[in-house]
Structure formats: structure tokens, C-alpha cells
Length: 610
Image (tube, rainbow, N blue to C red; front, side):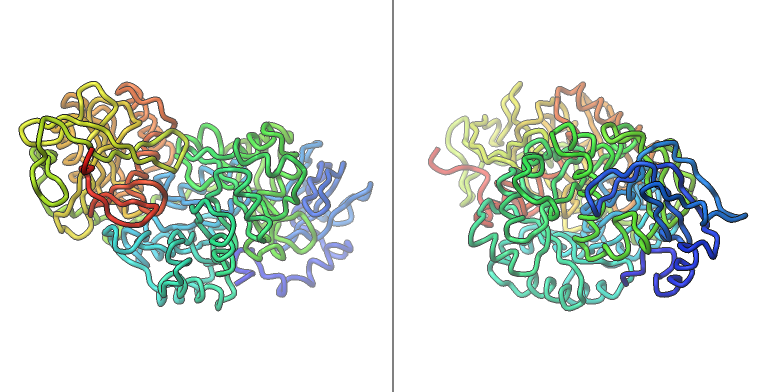
């Protein structure tokens, strides 16, 4: 398994590397005159040469020594011209599906930005189609050089009993997945209450992972840093990307857990987390920089881990330390440092040439010794993938949605009508750049026996429709923080990916919902009976079958529509998509109703006694 992500296993080609290192055999590639970012020694070494054979590093020329003795008739010599040479980047936690394209198209977007490998949790697609989704995604990923190191979804559904997903994953599925060459561990264990309670399902999944000698990755949203965090780490969960403060990240490192510092398109935590790595008070070996979720427009316009590195340095993290956090630290996190993560003899020749260590502009990316991207352009172009019916036939709502569907009867939890012309209801309040919501109690009018948002207020209706098994089940609530007039709908609704509709106009909400049902899923913005923006996502209802550039253009169009409708959030669809994620505090809405995600219990829409 440990050799699964290299062109050739070391045991098979180490004799050739020995010959090349001593000049008795010609290298395939020699990079000359680089400034080597040594992540093993924590320094920049001037005027370094690197010789590559069999897709691996054979020789480093340091201290005035060159790789001239490794050059033969067939050797490709690359003049670095004083550029910085570093290990190519490894994202230690990412969901490819958030880029709304398949892994092959995702690779076209990120490899030119210096990324050679990702620890990918495909739980978004697996919530829709389970192990079938995993098999389809791996088939697409196999067509590109990006090393897609998979951590299959552990929480499918995210919180059992509180939502309905398209599929489920159990201990036997995890045990089967651990036998895949592409699998390096278990996807983020979001069921932290289940782990703390020693429930059979989450503990069985973690145990099956550890028994296979692989890594259990985490998602710990409990703010406790004492007994509960100790217990979570003791279960065998090695890393976590859900810290929202430097103090939380530090607590994890002190307990031996990798702190994955996140900066994605919408979840922008690095500014708050950077002091844990910049202060110099803690060793940074157990810290990684990750993206978690990135929109296609972010990847194309701003970059991937190169973007995060720029921000890390701007936040005061030493440049070499930051590079360590996307290379050797990530490799160590998954037990892969013997194969990748450093530019040292025997390791995979996954290399990146950088113009500097401030802007991190990528000049060239090499994977297994092959140049796969130059000057911002991928040198590979896979044909569109032919997704099977499992991936495409996923939009089954089970009812005809019309304007009347979005009426919310003004009744208490016991079914009795609300007295008076207004009622106090629970509302989910979201804020830009945060995964955490707040529960607020707001007063809304009662009109013709139904609860309605106050015209001109920031309160919107919110509906979640089960869309996998045609049950016709749905639930209603209210949302705050988006500031729009009209309707917004999407099937990117973490993690069950049911049909989520938010708005203040029933006709617009009906049009938005029907549009996505007809298109097989996606994201849409509607105002005054007009579709202002649409992203079609017919693959599992969360991904496109088109090129990443076209998808980015569609996403940009929808974001412009959001802005026209009054929303000032960064990546607002990503924030809206968390309204139904029942594993993060405080309040969420699933197809079964409101969930208090602190006590993990259903709560009524109407607040009694207020």
C-alpha cells in the first residue's frame, strides 16, 4: 500500500537509484541551479541539483556539488535559474466534490498550483450513493497524475437518526475500503458524540481502520479541550481540521493530534489559527495547512495550497515552516513520509519550482519525475468521464412541488394552532466564513394561519426535501444572515445533500425547487419569477460533468446573482449548504426537522412561552 502512490516501488528500483547516484547510470531528469527548500532540515540551500530516475530522487547535489555526473545522452536537464525547489504540495484534508467537478477535472485545476497529492474524503458523494460512488470516483481519478489518497466517508449519514441520505456506510464497508490501494485512512469522524459514548458504529469503523494499519481522521467540534478531547484522541483519531482558535489547535497538538489549519473558499479560519504556528512557542511538526472545501472559481483565480501558503506567510508563519506544513508534515500525518513529502534520495520525485517564498508563484510541477504542469497550465487533458446511472439518477423527490408547498402552518409542537397574529420561532443564523451557526428566537407574523417572514427583514423560510428515495418527506424552518429577496435552492446541502430551498417568496421558491428537480441537481438563484443564476450538477446532484473552467463561470454567475439579491457573504452557497449539516453546532434543519446540534435532539419550530 505504501508504494501505491509512486511510479515504481522503491524495492523494485533501488538498485537503479544507487547506480544513478554514483554516476554509473544516467538520470532521467536533472534539475540544476535551484534553491532547495529542505523540509527535513528547515533551511533553504543555495545552488542545489536534483537527479531523478524511476520517478524518484536519486541524488542531491549540495554544497557546491553538482549532478553533472548523472547526466547522460537521454537525460532531460532543467535549468531552475535560481528558482526555489520544494516538495510538491500535499493537501491533508479536502473534499473534491466541493469544487463541483470530478477528480480528473479537479486535478487539472490544482496540479498547476503545485499540488501533487490530496488526502481526499469523498463523503459528499458517498452520502448520495455509498460505496458505488467511491468506486466511480476512483475510476475517474485513476486517469490523472494527481495522487488521490482516499479516506472514505465514515459518517454516512453524518448523524444517524437525524437525516435521510441516499446511502449508508457501515463497519463492513469500511473494512472493505481499507483493502483498496488508494485508501490511506478513514474519512473525518464527525460523529464525535458517538465516539465519546463508545457507540458501536463509529468505534467499529475507527477500529477497523486501525486494524488495517491506516489513519483515522477527525472532526471534533466540541469546544472542550480536556476530558472529551482526550477521549477522542485516545480512540485513535489522529488529526482534526475543526479548530476555530489557536488555543484549540494548540490543545490538539499537545495531545499528539495533528492540527489541520483550514483556509478554504468559505471556511476562512487561518487568520485566527496562524498564531499557533507563527508564535514560535510550539513545535509545528504536528500542524498542516489544508483547504477542506474550495469552489472552482477560487481554484482557478486564486490557487490551491499556493494560495494558503501566501496567506500563511502574510499571517506571520515562517515560509519554510509553511512549506513543511503542506509537505513533510502531511506525509507524516498519513505515515507516507518514507515515500513522499521531501526532496531527498529515494522519495517520489514530486517537485515544484517556485518563483519566490512570498507569493509562491508556481513555475513548474513534477509528479513522479514527470513535468505535469508549467506556467499555470496542466500538461494533461483527460477526456470527459462517462458517469454511470448510479451517479446520474439521484434526484427523486417524490412529490409535486408548488407554491402551496412552502406554506408553514402556524402550529405548536402538539399540533394546536398558534394564538394571535405572530409567533416566536427558532431561526438558524449563519455568518460569512464560519461553519458554526447560532440559534436565534425571532418573532414572525401569522398570516392566514401560516408563519411568514417579516417583509424587508433578514428572516427567510428554509425547507429541506428528502430527494434520494422519493419519500416526499420535508421539513421547514427559518434562516437568517443571507439578506436576500427571492429564492435560493441547491442540492449541495451537507452532508445528506437533500434539496435545500431558502427564500421569502413562495412562487420563487417553487420555481427554484422545480428547476433543480428537472436538471438533476445543482444551485439556482431566483427573484421575481426569473432565474438569475444556475449551476447544473447532474453527477450525484453535487458535481458537474463539464470542464472546471465552465463550472467556475457558472458559479461566478450564481454568486453575482446572490450579490444582486443583497448578499455580501464570501461563497454564500457554501455557507447556505451547511444549514442542514447536523454535526456542527448549534442549530440545523434536516428533512426530519430542526436538530439541536449541542444536545443532539429534535426541537420544535415554534418556541413555547415566548
